[in-house]
Length: 119
Image 1 (tube, rainbow, N blue to C red):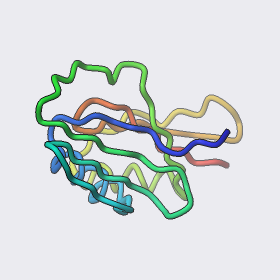
Image 2 (cartoon, rainbow, N blue to C red):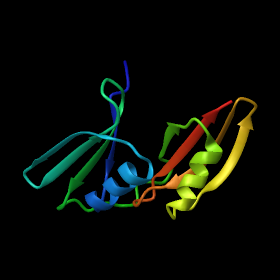
Image 3 (cartoon, helix red, strand yellow):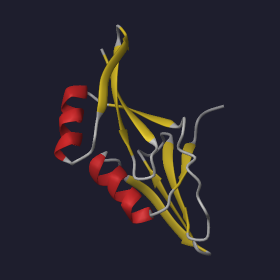
C-alpha cells in the first residue's frame, strides 16, 4: 500500500486554501466542485496529497486533536522565520533525536502542521 492523500474537512475553504497555498506554499493540484461539495488537492504531481474537503452542510467537530501533518523543509530556521513574518504562531523548535528537528504551526481549523528538517 502507498499513501494517496490525507483528507481534512474544513469549515472555510478559502481561508484554509490561503493558509496551505500562501503560508505553507503548497500548490493546487486539482480542484473539483459538485452537489454542494468542493474538493481541492494540494501537492506535487505523482506524490501524496493533502485533500481539503468543504461541504457547507457538514457540521464539523474539532477532530484536529491528535492529527499532525509533516512537511519537510530545507531549513527549519528559515521556515520558522517565514511563518512568523506571515503572522503564524510557531511552537518549537524541538530536536527529539540527533538527526531531526521540527516545529509546529496550526492551520485555520486547528490541525497541527509539523515543519521537519532532517539533519
